[in-house]
Image: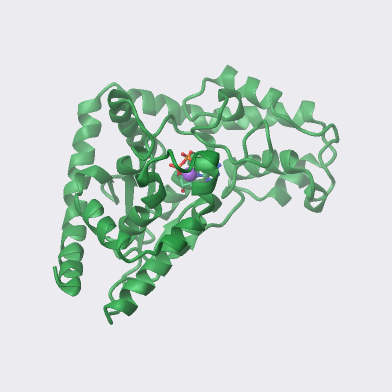
Length: 331
Ligand code: ADP
Ligand code: NA
C-alpha cells in the first residue's frame, strides 16, 4: 500500500486564468492538511511551445505567486518548480521507453493543440504526457486533482505505471487516481460554451485572468455570450444551454456552493441581474488574491527562495524513487 500523497502542477505559459483557479489552485489549497501535498510549477512543460526566456522566468514566479496568494502554505505543502528537480526529466526518459506511440496518438489534447500542424510541433509537445506521468509517479502520488482536460493524461499515467510494474515484475508505482469533482472541473471560455477557458485562448475577452481589475472582470462578464432566455427554474433546465451552465458553474464554484443552490436563488432571473451579481462575486473572491500576487511579485527573490526550498524538499522524495527505478531497470 502507498502512503496517500497528492501531486499536481500548473504550466507557466502565460497568466493564470479563472479555470486554473477554480479547477486547480483552489482545490489544491483545499487538500492541504488532508494528505501530504506536492505542487509544482511545470516549467519543462511550458517549453514544449517556444517561450520568451525572460517571460518564462516571470511566468514561473507568477504561478508560484498565484499558488501562495490563494492560500498554499509552503510549510504544509511542497511548492517547487519542475526544472530544479532533474529527476523529472530522467524518469520522463524512462517512461518514453515504456509508453507506446499508439497511446500518445490517442491523446486528444495533442490533436487539439497540434491541429493540422502535427508535423511542425515539437517532439516535446507529443511526449509531454509521458513527462507528466513522471511528474506524478516520481512522488508515488496516489491522487492528482486536475480539471477534466487532464483526465486522459492521468489515465495514461496509470497505463504507464501498470506497464512498468508488469514489464519489470514489480509493484513499484501506484495506480494514481485522478480527482475531478465539483462544479469547476471544466470552466468554459466566455465566448464559446464548448471550448475550455485557457491561458492561451485567442482573445483576452474570452477568459477572466486572476489578475484582472474589477472593471475588466465586470466588462468581461457583461459581454459574455449567453442565450436570451432567463435562468431556468431548476438545474435540469440548463441542459443544452452551455453558456448558461458555465456561468452558473462559475458562480457555484466561486461561492463554494452547488449549481442547484445557485438556481434556487436566481430561478427565472434575467442576465441583467445575474451577470452583475456574478461579477461582484468574482471581484470579491479574486481581488484579494490579485493584490497579494502583486505584493509577492514585488519581491522576486523571496519567491525564488520559496521555490528553492521546495525544490530541495521535493528532491528528498524524488531522488530515492529515481534511484530505485534505475536499480529495477538495470541502469
Ligand atoms: P491552461 O490550460 O490554462 O494552460 P494548465 O494546462 O497549466 O492550464 O493546467 C493547470 C491546471 O488547471 C490543470 O489541472 C487543468 O486541468 C486546470 N485547468 C485549466 N483550464 C481549466 C478550465 N478551463 N477548467 C477547469 N480546470 C482547468
Ligand atoms: Na491544460
